[in-house]
Amino acid sequence: LEARCIYTYIGGVLVAMNPFTWLEIYGPEAAKRYTHVSRLDVPPHVFAVAEEAFRSMTDEEESQCIIISGESGAGKTEASKQIQSYLSIVSAGKGSKEVERVKKVF
Image (tube, rainbow, N blue to C red; front, side):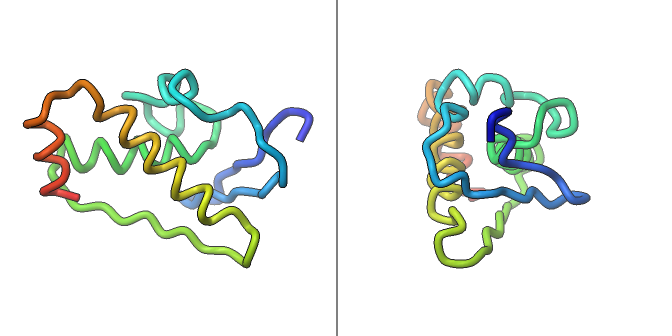
């Protein structure tokens, strides 16, 4: 945890470890690192997965599904909150037409 690396990839799957403490690896500044960037060009992060889904919804107009699984206390709820947070950050300021278009795809 000293390096704050709680994420890794196994193939196309993001694996996360619950650090049981708040890490300053989320928020608008962190989201900017992942916006318009391939998940392979940035460190593993839940924002990279959210970015990939968001781009598929906006650029290719394809519905997306992100599966979050794990045992009780594994951080599933926090992961889903961070995905929703990322989607709200990157869609903010896009204008109501863009938001409505993503909602229809989503």
